[in-house]
Length: 113
Image 1 (cartoon, rainbow, N blue to C red):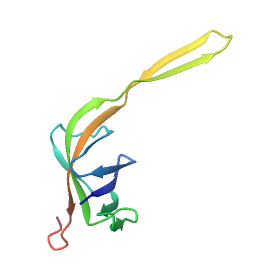
Image 2 (cartoon, rainbow, N blue to C red; image 1 turned 135 degrees about the vertical axis):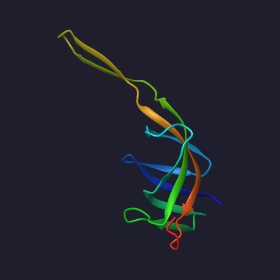
Image 3 (cartoon, rainbow, N blue to C red; image 1 turned 120 degrees about the vertical axis):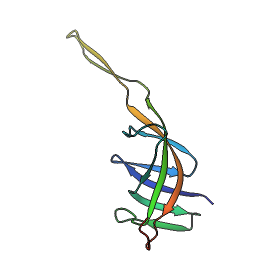
Image 4 (tube, one colour; image 1 turned 180 degrees about the horizontal axis):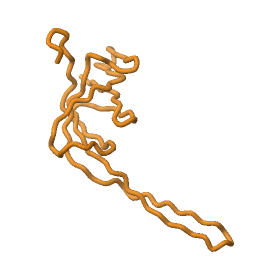
Protein backbone atom coordinates (compact mmCIF):
# COMPACT_ATOMS: atom_id res chain seq x y z
CA UNK A 1 0.00 0.00 0.00
CA UNK A 2 1.81 3.06 -1.25
CA UNK A 3 0.26 6.26 -0.03
CA UNK A 4 1.66 9.73 -0.15
CA UNK A 5 0.58 13.31 0.36
CA UNK A 6 1.55 16.65 -1.14
CA UNK A 7 1.88 19.06 1.80
CA UNK A 8 2.46 22.81 1.96
CA UNK A 9 5.30 23.65 4.39
CA UNK A 10 6.33 27.32 4.61
CA UNK A 11 4.97 28.12 1.16
CA UNK A 12 6.66 25.19 -0.62
CA UNK A 13 5.11 21.87 -1.56
CA UNK A 14 6.69 18.54 -0.60
CA UNK A 15 5.78 14.95 -1.42
CA UNK A 16 5.67 13.03 1.88
CA UNK A 17 5.72 9.22 2.00
CA UNK A 18 5.11 7.28 5.21
CA UNK A 19 8.29 6.25 7.15
CA UNK A 20 10.52 8.28 4.81
CA UNK A 21 12.38 11.45 5.68
CA UNK A 22 12.73 14.73 3.79
CA UNK A 23 14.63 18.01 4.25
CA UNK A 24 12.39 21.08 4.54
CA UNK A 25 13.01 24.74 5.43
CA UNK A 26 13.75 25.19 9.15
CA UNK A 27 10.74 24.55 11.37
CA UNK A 28 11.10 26.41 14.66
CA UNK A 29 10.18 23.47 16.91
CA UNK A 30 12.53 21.48 19.13
CA UNK A 31 14.28 18.36 17.91
CA UNK A 32 12.53 14.99 18.48
CA UNK A 33 9.13 16.72 18.82
CA UNK A 34 6.06 15.48 16.95
CA UNK A 35 3.62 17.81 15.18
CA UNK A 36 0.67 17.66 12.80
CA UNK A 37 0.55 19.30 9.37
CA UNK A 38 -2.90 20.21 8.12
CA UNK A 39 -2.17 21.90 4.77
CA UNK A 40 -2.54 18.76 2.65
CA UNK A 41 -3.39 19.60 -0.97
CA UNK A 42 -3.30 16.07 -2.46
CA UNK A 43 -3.58 12.61 -0.93
CA UNK A 44 -3.11 9.38 -2.90
CA UNK A 45 -3.85 5.86 -1.64
CA UNK A 46 -2.92 2.81 -3.77
CA UNK A 47 -2.70 4.97 -6.93
CA UNK A 48 -6.47 4.41 -7.33
CA UNK A 49 -8.00 6.65 -4.68
CA UNK A 50 -6.97 10.27 -5.15
CA UNK A 51 -8.23 13.07 -2.93
CA UNK A 52 -7.66 16.62 -4.19
CA UNK A 53 -8.14 19.63 -1.95
CA UNK A 54 -9.46 23.02 -3.00
CA UNK A 55 -7.01 24.38 -1.82
CA UNK A 56 -6.52 21.97 1.11
CA UNK A 57 -8.12 18.76 2.37
CA UNK A 58 -10.03 19.26 5.60
CA UNK A 59 -10.20 15.67 6.86
CA UNK A 60 -6.56 14.49 6.42
CA UNK A 61 -3.56 15.58 8.48
CA UNK A 62 0.05 14.37 8.47
CA UNK A 63 1.81 13.36 11.71
CA UNK A 64 5.56 14.12 11.50
CA UNK A 65 8.59 13.98 13.77
CA UNK A 66 11.49 16.43 13.58
CA UNK A 67 14.72 14.43 13.52
CA UNK A 68 17.33 17.21 13.40
CA UNK A 69 18.13 20.79 12.42
CA UNK A 70 21.06 21.41 10.08
CA UNK A 71 22.52 23.67 7.42
CA UNK A 72 22.36 22.91 3.71
CA UNK A 73 25.15 22.82 1.16
CA UNK A 74 27.03 26.08 0.62
CA UNK A 75 26.00 28.08 -2.42
CA UNK A 76 28.65 30.45 -3.80
CA UNK A 77 27.55 33.78 -5.29
CA UNK A 78 30.25 35.42 -7.40
CA UNK A 79 29.84 38.76 -9.18
CA UNK A 80 32.39 40.31 -11.53
CA UNK A 81 32.52 43.19 -13.98
CA UNK A 82 35.20 42.79 -16.59
CA UNK A 83 37.88 45.46 -17.01
CA UNK A 84 36.61 47.36 -13.94
CA UNK A 85 38.39 45.49 -11.15
CA UNK A 86 35.08 44.69 -9.48
CA UNK A 87 34.81 41.25 -7.88
CA UNK A 88 32.53 40.15 -5.09
CA UNK A 89 32.32 36.65 -3.61
CA UNK A 90 29.61 35.67 -1.18
CA UNK A 91 28.34 32.39 0.30
CA UNK A 92 25.02 31.18 1.60
CA UNK A 93 23.85 28.09 3.54
CA UNK A 94 20.15 27.51 3.99
CA UNK A 95 18.75 26.37 7.34
CA UNK A 96 16.97 23.02 7.06
CA UNK A 97 15.04 20.58 9.22
CA UNK A 98 15.05 16.83 8.62
CA UNK A 99 11.55 15.43 9.20
CA UNK A 100 10.13 11.91 9.16
CA UNK A 101 6.53 11.08 8.31
CA UNK A 102 4.99 8.93 11.04
CA UNK A 103 1.48 8.50 9.67
CA UNK A 104 -1.41 9.99 7.74
CA UNK A 105 -4.36 10.61 10.04
CA UNK A 106 -7.96 10.98 8.99
CA UNK A 107 -9.95 13.36 11.19
CA UNK A 108 -13.07 11.91 12.74
CA UNK A 109 -16.12 14.02 12.12
CA UNK A 110 -17.68 12.88 15.41
CA UNK A 111 -14.98 13.94 17.88
CA UNK A 112 -13.12 16.53 15.74
CA UNK A 113 -9.62 15.00 16.08
